[in-house]
Image 1 (tube, rainbow, N blue to C red):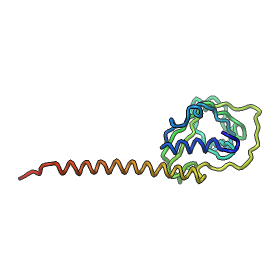
Image 2: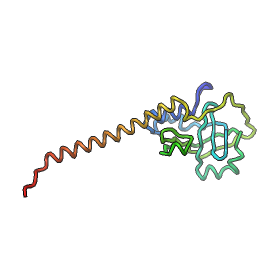
Image 3: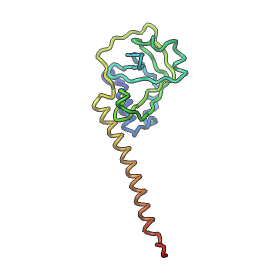
Image 4: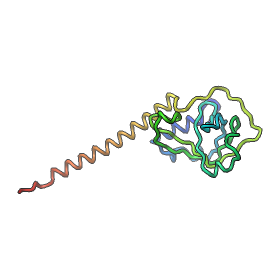
Length: 171
């Protein structure tokens, strides 16, 4: 990604614009390590690309590879192996979500960069408060509801047609 664009925003909008399908993220991007700054390590582990922050969720293997995750606060890390996972959540309880949906950054492997210090150019924002990301999520939810409604309507029509073709019983 260029210096003037958010890597996280690209990932989030790509996934939501493709109906939550992580496999639609280009292979080259999925295989690229993510270099980011650890904004906060407790109670939430938040990383930033200098534009937006997102929470990380660690596999046991990734968590065990670091002595103490809390010590990474204020440092640069490289997430070597990662994936994205959709979760249904209560947005009133999970501040890193919108519309009951959270896209989780799952960390399978990471490396802490020794001596790498950076200064952030701006104050990063919660990615779920960005207007474009919120619009993508709203559209994703709307599409999911319409697919569900269409399936229900189709089943209702099938039931109605089937009941018309039944022969009435006579006593």
